[in-house]
Amino acid sequence: MKLVPVKQAQAKFFNAPADKGLKSLTLATFKKDRSLILERDGEGWFLVEDGFEKSRSPLPPGAAGKRLLREAFKREFPRSANAYLAEVR
Image 1 (cartoon, rainbow, N blue to C red):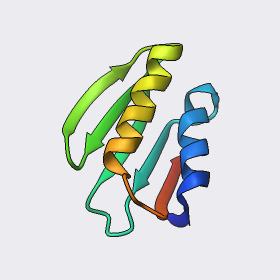
Image 2 (cartoon, helix red, strand yellow; image 1 turned 90 degrees about the vertical axis):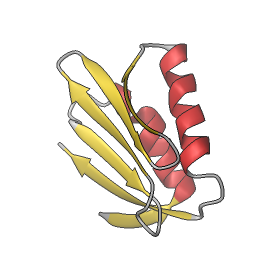
Image 3 (cartoon, rainbow, N blue to C red; image 1 turned 180 degrees about the vertical axis):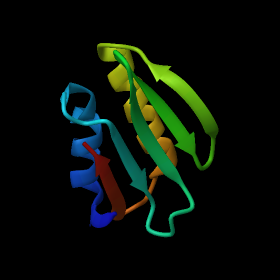
Image 4 (cartoon, one colour; image 1 turned 60 degrees about the vertical axis):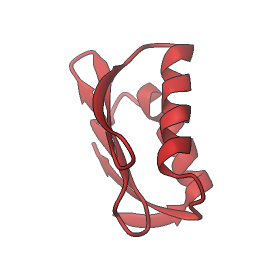
């Protein structure tokens, strides 16, 4: 995991479903008490929230999926300046 600015982590997180070589992407807060994980499962993606909310849900394609990612990011990283980022290819 490497520490990156939250804007860079946010851009990587929102563009992850379009990256064909990516298997999973993990974002964690500086204290590592909250995290968001995007996992590829066959054809689709799953969003795993572990923080304010604990859930695992499939990511719908298109605009609905982007909206779900944006809402989860705002919920888990409300005032963060930095985030830990880990990729599995």
